[in-house]
Picture 1 (cartoon, rainbow, N blue to C red):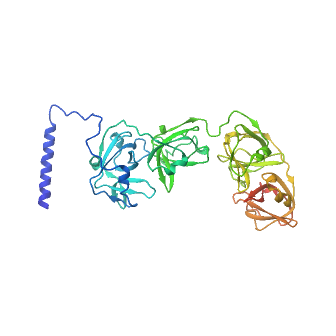
Picture 2: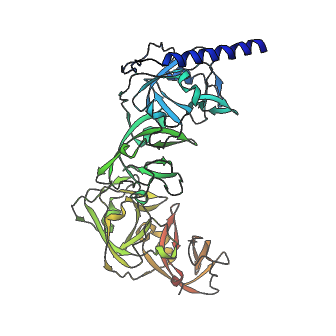
Picture 3: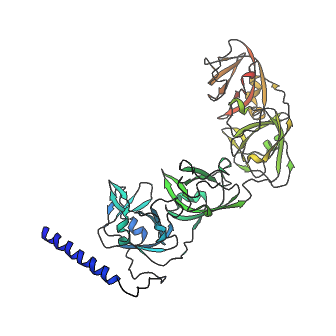
Length: 468
C-alpha cells in the first residue's frame, strides 16, 4: 500500500509539471461561452430523490443518480447562507455547499445537474429536503473543493414560474417551492420596519397577512444586504421560497425586489361615508360572520380605558346613546383613550359574536379619527336587569349601587359582585394597573363595562376609580 501511495505522488507530480509546461504557449484556449446544457443524462426527478429520505437522518445515495433543476435561490443577497435551492417540475430541494459567493457560478435562473452518488439526502422533520454530505448525523455542506465534482452548471437565464397561492394554500404546497402570494400586506406593526437588524445582524420575522385574518411569518437574515431596508406600507404581492418551520409555513425572499406592495391596504377608506348608529350595527348581526357594507361608519365615545390595562390593547368599547360595541383593530391601539369622541369607518370589516360578545373585527387603525371629547353617563341598573337582557347592555357603561365584591384578596382574576340576593361575575386582568389593589371591605357603588364571556354576563372595571 505504501508503495502504491508513493507511486501516486510521483505520478501526480509529473502530471502537474506536464500541465504547467503545456500552459506556456502563445495561444490560449477560448473559454466556454455556449449557453447550453451539458450532455448529462438525468436519472431521477427531485421528488424521486426526496423519496430516498426515509427519516430525519441522512441517507447515503449509493447509486449513480443525477438530478437537474433550476436555481430558485442563491447566496447573492445573503438571505440564504451557503444554501442553494433548485426546483424541477416535481419539487424543490436545498443543496448545502461550503462555497461563498457561489451565485457567480450557479445564479438564480441557471439549470444545474447534480451527481448524487456518495451524497446524502434527508428530511429535516418539517418536510424540508436537503442534499449534501453527512456531518454528525445531519446534512453538512459539500466542501468547496468538491462542489464542481457534484454540481455542473447548465443553461442560464431561465425562469421558474412561481406557484400562485393564497395564505390558506401554503400548507398544501410542497416545501421549498417558489410561490407568489397576491393581495397581502405587512401587519400594521411591521410596516416601515427593517426586515432585520443590520447593526446586530439579528434575524427577524415580520408578519404578512391578507384581508381575511390569515397570516404568516416572513423570515429575513440580519446578514442580508437588504436587512436595513424598510418594509412597504401598501398591499400587493410577494414572490418567495415557502418553507416549513416548526410545523408552520414560513416565507423567505431572495431580495427586497421580491416584494411588490404599492397598492392600498386591506380595508383602506373607501371615500364613502354612510353613517350608522351602533344599534343599527347590532341589528345587522347574526350567528355567523358578516362583512359590513362599504362606507358604513359609526360615531361614539370610547368608554374603555386602554391605559389602565384591563382591556386587550387592540380593542376599544364605543357607545352612542344606550348602545355599545367592541371595535377590534388590526394593531394595538395607543391613541384612542377613555372619553374620546371618535368616528370609525367599519365598512368591509367583520361583524360577529365572540363567545357571545359582539365585535367589529379587523378594523385598520387609520380608520379611526378623534373628533373631540365625549361624555357617557353610566346607566344605573341592577344585576337582574343585566342578566335578563345581556345583549342590550353588553359593551355599555353601567353603574351598580350598594354592591359587595368578594372571592379574592385583590381585584386580579375572577371575583363575585353581590347586590342583595343577586350575584354576577367580575374579571380583572393581571395586566390591569389596579389588579393588585385590595378588594373593598364593605358596600360600594361599582361602575364598569358589561362584558359577555361564554354567553354569560359579567362586569369589567375600566380603572381603579370605578369603585366609588
